[in-house]
Length: 183
Image (cartoon, rainbow, N blue to C red):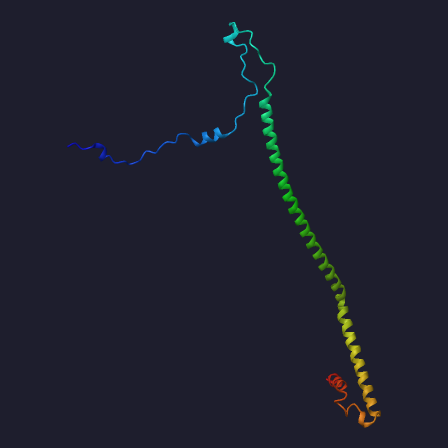
């Protein structure tokens, strides 16, 4: 019996299957090709210089179709670029508009607070407001003292049954005023 030598072979590195085409070549093949502007013509050359084919028609103009195709593609590309630029400009314009509105709101808020602060500052300069309040308190205290003294004088003149000090329930506010003022 013979042994099969292929059975005893140990494969260290399996051979990879090669790609039929490279990805770069596939990408290059997918790009649209541009046709030459000049078509192939059989003009005078070394092969035809001494031959009998001198009566061939040589075109006098260029083939315009490749030009037209190229410029149509270029025009379409420019249109797409301009649409993208317009879209981006509109987005930027809206963002600037919102930013301007936001800044105006902040500016008006700061201006209002500044004017309010200035008003408060003018009122508090030299403690004029506090001084006015203290003066009003003093005047009120003097007025209350004067009222209480007049009530006491009146209380001495009126009959006993309607006197203020004898009827605290009837004249509760006056009694309360006297108590708080004497404190």
